[in-house]
Length: 194
Image (cartoon, rainbow, N blue to C red):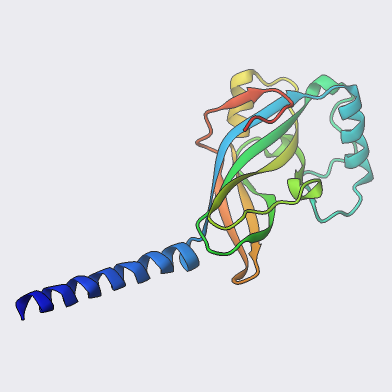
């Protein structure tokens, strides 16, 4: 009789723990994001021409977020501009696929006047995360860096938070903010490393 009662208690505890785990992983925090590293490189002439065109034309595009609205760029020297890729790890703990992820700049804590515009990687890639898997997404930024040392550039790259907007067929659209202040891996290369 006593062992039957103990088994019932154990079963009840296991059921309650299972419900808590499922609630957390499927509803409260089905997706987690973390900035793994930052790739950056100084613009060449062709990329500078692209920056200049995108910035001065200021054409409406839902994947482009204009951060500062200068009437013209602060400099005509390509070496004064840097492209930054934030490499964001997506961990989907859910039983449901994430069908779309957008990345935007949420807040800039320092050097705000240096940031030109951001391009969500969904502009060129289909951002998704299969159920119970990990994947990478990217957020690109174009930054004016003339007169900044390498340490100041790293500080600049740590000075913002990103807003990630994701959508699942089951739960709909949700947002999550992540900070870049703890990034310690800076890669001076235009090529993204996984």
